[in-house]
Image (cartoon, rainbow, N blue to C red; front, top):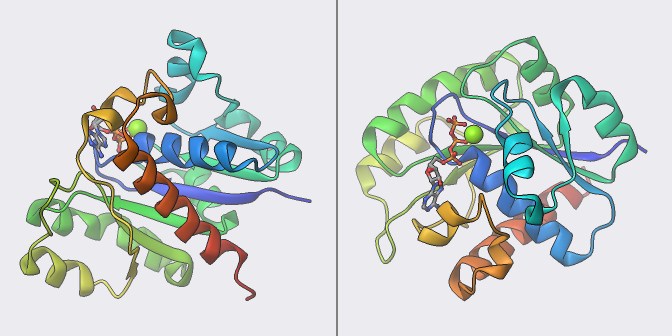
Length: 203
Ligand SMILES: Nc1ncnc2c1ncn2[C@@H]1O[C@H](COP(=O)(O)OP(=O)(O)OP(=O)(O)O)[C@@H](O)[C@H]1O
Ligand SMILES: [Mg+2]
């Protein structure tokens, strides 16, 4: 059976793709899902580099050239993408079960999201795409101006957002569950549960 595939996507650098992919990976491993893996589509190989620099992360991560193997040999695959797209990205977006489109809660970021939305629309992938707000200032809600821009895209927004927390920045070196930040863990679990519900819903 081919792996259920979650692709974390956005054409904006720094929107939180890699941190989101890592968080989802940690949450699904923690849940006890067997054969969870990461696929690193980034030519800078950020996840592969992290695994080399911080071996205690203990990530099961495949490089882009091993995509087919990663899909064939796992149950759940979480894909980190670069801030650009090419034929490989389009192929994995099409093959995915869900696309998580990361966006910071600011007007400029919401406007720039349009580039990624166009890729989604050109490939008719709207129904399996969800927007995830990342790096939301703790205790704040994102403004109606940002909400208005995002709702204009006609793509569903996930109920869970990821707040701006130091633990997420640290999670590239140490598993988020080992950082002692209960609020971050709760958020990551809410996100993985929400996504799990979407990908396991009968079509
Ligand atoms: N929720 C968060 N709270 C605090 N810092 C965060 C959060 N999410 C990401 N960061 C930090 O913001 C920066 C960008 O995050 P990340 O590397 O995940 O973005 P990206 O979309 O993968 O970027 P790129 O397109 O360059 O690969 C990193 O320094 C990361 O540690
Ligand atoms: Mg990245």
